[in-house]
Image (cartoon, rainbow over all chains, first blue to last red; front, side, top):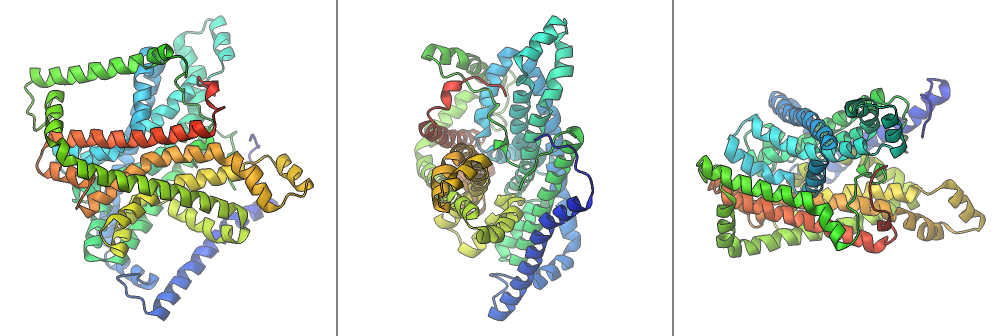
Length: 265
Length: 273
């Protein structure tokens, strides 16, 4: 899909508007309808609070909301960042050692099917409470997709290209740097986009188990108190974090591969 | 936005003779065995307290002792996971078809799907629990929610990724929308569907586990929390292992279904783009 970078002409801007405006309009209408329905049918806030009620509660608890949001965000980002570094290192190591790759990669693919969040209680026994166990859970969750995808990318070089480089007597290191790494970039970003969503899941579930901080704690407390408004607020914040992380990784991908335009309808 | 964008670059193990498969699995088996042996030796040599890291021998012993007691919990978790997985898959396919077929429903439902998609679905667990209480059905709903989205997204992509020429051809033959759906779009979407299905297999286990973390009455999630409070490390490790087996089993079942539905796919073996 090698489209050249689209220019900012009139047709273009209009097309962009056509895609962004309807969903936004829809959300605004949905929220207004939500408010009207709750008031008209007199629905109890325990079951479904009105948007006005939710916003009121959000403003009322804003300092706590902010501190817990930052905690969860920090755990997710830290786990995500560390996982990227370690995953790329391991993927490169797989290129150097066929044995390790053939041994570990199938195991990693298997582990991807397991619930990595199940390690949360184990990590909590080891590291107690605080940020570290949650960062490690987020790391675990992000690590495997990135390793598997990046390894695939490092390997998926056309054999002819490898033959050519060997004829030119390129060292293995040069092959790695000049051919394999650039080739792996799209695959890498595929894994990174998957991992960005998973990092929040990892941090959140670790907080569910630890019950000491973060949006997981807020959600748990809200559930026990039947505080539906707080549940909705937390869901909304988590959604924003998810969208934010995805947007950042998409931006990074576009910067790294400017020739590539993935169009999705 | 989904992992299925790429065309299976993950190096598949060659489906050759039994000997070939053993050769392919060799390094993995070696590494696993070495890890387990090293684990046992390190714990003994450094005299690590079993509460901190029990050796494999102790884990196995513990598993044998607690095994029978775990069975009802295993069956609960298995039931919730599989039910959520299957119902989620069915609903997801239905939703994908509805979105593709009806422009009206697509304009209403797709924005909702996209918005909800960015939220970690586990965050909906407390909401489901407040609305539906504690029991098996809410847990199934949570497991369902988690597995639902990858399948909808991938199947919808598959339903839509038909070459325009094929659609034009169908229309020149005056095929009705329904016929196009059945004969062209659905078969085209099968690989995409299985891609999402395999992802959903792993996620359904997570969904069931998280539901059990929050409801705490039955199931492996509940047992794991109990083991955590009792600092029974060996039991924690055993349960992690069992959950892993459930995840792998479900993934294997989905892969098996994929191979049955698309028997031509496997002949290609090998990896690479």
